[in-house]
Image (tube, rainbow, N blue to C red; front, side):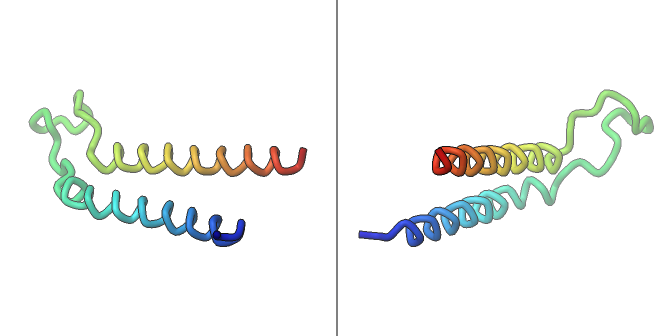
Length: 79
């Protein structure tokens, strides 16, 4: 049986591995993100978001969920 500290260390490794794996899988999409304006010469036209913006949003959501989960666990342990 694993101790509490061992389980926490395993969870941390799992989170880091998941983020690194997601970054590695998404690397081709990030590499070929849009460089040129999409509406001819107008760089301020109605362009879709670049791929790297979506990746940053997804990473921020995962980081926020992990942070909130840790905060909730810390509050439950205090009570």
